[in-house]
Image (cartoon, rainbow, N blue to C red):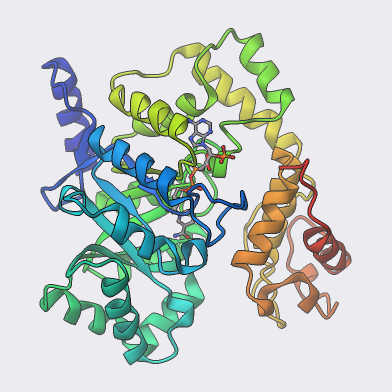
Length: 406
Ligand SMILES: NC(=O)c1ccc[n+]([C@@H]2O[C@H](COP(=O)([O-])OP(=O)(O)OC[C@H]3O[C@@H](n4cnc5c(N)ncnc54)[C@H](OP(=O)(O)O)[C@@H]3O)[C@@H](O)[C@H]2O)c1
């Protein structure tokens, strides 16, 4: 399937088709803009990332400029901006903007305790978004555990009912876990239209990775990409990385480099960018205008290879995310925690790791739940002293905010 798509894309370039800014949305026959708008990092009046105090005037201007510039896919979720992202969108997408976009939001699976909750959230979200239909409804943040819960509670049946009733057009899921879980979720259910994965040139072997991307595309799913700039790290890299750009004479902006790398892959459908000011909107729209027709030069390919090598060498813990340490008898998400430690070291990103720890790690997955039993250490191929690390990890990730870092 993606082989055919590759040929089609090459034909389109040969024939001078001007609109490579739009890409097939899986097997739906729909076209989606190469650039989508992620509504998780909107500007805020208090300057705090993700806070409920969205700067509505600035964010509305950004969103409408993006749509006027050709963008037609908006991604949000029940929980973004302290549950204020959806109500904000209802206002920002008034005056005819709603009809010009595919609107995607996500069911907060971890808040669903019984089957009826799924429908309750959906109806609340339709009201919050002031719309009578969602173009895409996703199960938010699936991993192996949450997928089993979705199956156990019969939530797919509820989701299918919503499709039959016309409340939802397409079903999908966003994903944070290892490749094996991704394959399982894709293969277990034939009703998916779209998968949303974390993917960028540093994550080719992390989470779903390139293998997961291709697997989903082969099965006819549209693949949407989140964290294309690793939450901004690839757009504002540490000085050591900036030096590599100069060494190799690469003038392209780091953000554009990361985006064009993604659009060079035909299996990628829409790249969601969490833009946080109007300048970023303009820059990323300009990048999207060149999507698929501005391939990386050999020097830029070499740069990416060297960036990977340099950043990998900055890892603090030699965890490869193999998951052999799991399940932890206390429920600690060991590879996820080491990811945060390494992210802080690789990208000077301590502040962002602390934010992620607060936002995405429920109490029972945190480092302070480690009881020191050492069961994980007997299974770790890298011989990491996990139980010694855990108290340090917790201290590091719960320390005082350091505005200077990450
Ligand atoms: N379902 C999930 O579990 C999940 C998880 C994560 C994301 N998502 C979705 O995916 C979307 C995209 O992910 P993301 O927000 O992490 O995207 P991202 O593009 O990796 O990061 C966004 C950040 O990159 C920086 N940036 C963007 N364009 C730039 C440019 N031209 N020049 C310089 N810096 C630029 C900004 O950072 P600064 O503000 O620091 O300048 C911005 O806040 C989210 O908004 C959300 O809708 C979903």
